[in-house]
Image (tube, rainbow, N blue to C red; front, side):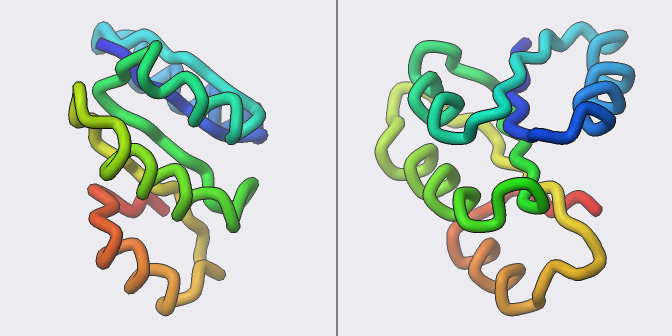
Length: 103
């Protein structure tokens, strides 16, 4: 099973890897959100984990593209947030069918 991680924070990459690799997941990591989005169809991940802290303006585009334009598979979209993440953005995420918000 594959997880596509889009984050610039190396500590997040380490934590995600430490948790999911023992469970049999392979982690594909992109620092550049546009390159990650460009490879959604090629990689066909079961889960996309997107760090909104690193890329606050890209997560909506990535989620919408994944949910509406990529139709040959249906991955989960998890959004990493922090305590400063505005409630208005949470509402947008719910509307856009983000599968989980992870603090």
